[in-house]
Image 1 (cartoon, rainbow, N blue to C red):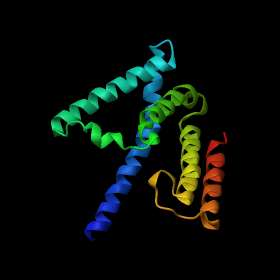
Image 2: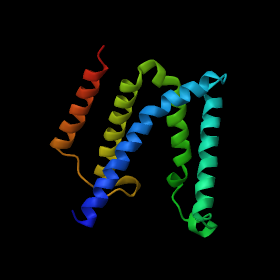
Image 3: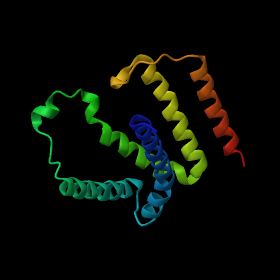
Amino acid sequence: MDKLTTLKVLFIVLALGAGCVMALQPAVNRKLSTACSHAVQASVISFGTGFIALLAIATAMRVGLPSWPQLAGLPWWAWTGGLLGTYMVTVSFLVAPTLGATRWIGWVLTGQIALSLVLDHFGWLDYDQQQINRMRVLGIGLVILGVMIVSRN
């Protein structure tokens, strides 16, 4: 296996791990929210512990902070990552317990793929442009069908 193939396999394993973490996170967060009086309180604690972990990792790796000139030229949307994460975590507090892990992740995955098709098609947010075609539309249709099937009781 060449170096590029090995790297791709590693990235797939890491992506699968991220998907597993996404399935775990709502349950972990739900337990946290039972001690709080509001989902936003639990989100603050969740992001607070994540922030502390990132500070510890950054300190251990000695990566430092970026300089203002490095950040000044960023487009407005590059600053929204934390807001997007806040939305995701807070909505998971509110929605995942009712939907259950399978439905939650299934619909999250469907939303991710659907928007990804649009982002790729138009090359928005610095993604390489890849046209929507019949096979991609069929793929998202099959994902939706799959989510509907696994969502049935």
